[in-house]
Length: 128
Image (cartoon, rainbow, N blue to C red; front, side):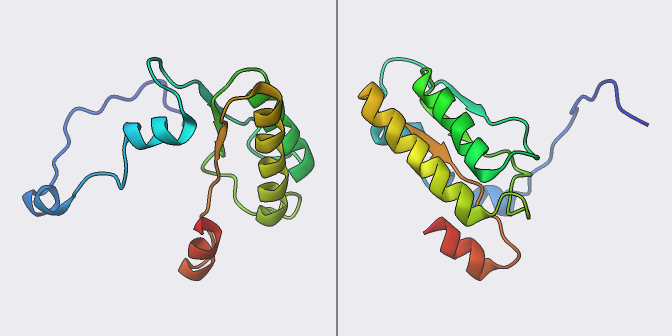
């Protein structure tokens, strides 16, 4: 049965985790520096539909969003490497879209690719 509403009422985090967690590897300032965006909120979106687009059409959607004024686009967490849109193909088309929109707007643009894979070696390869 589908939920109509959900509310988090309590969250407990162990003291050991709190003492050892150093926070994210980098924060908002690093992202601002990478995108050269200061004094305003970032404007970005997750590309939809998350499944069903070819890699080429996915890249085109990224281009249209970035060219239209967004600072960044990102993959939905479910977008991985599907038979109709392989990770390597998506990477190529999204990179092309990013560079093309940067050249046309004169602004630095970004895309956050989902690097999850079937094993840690492939995830590390994608992340690099």
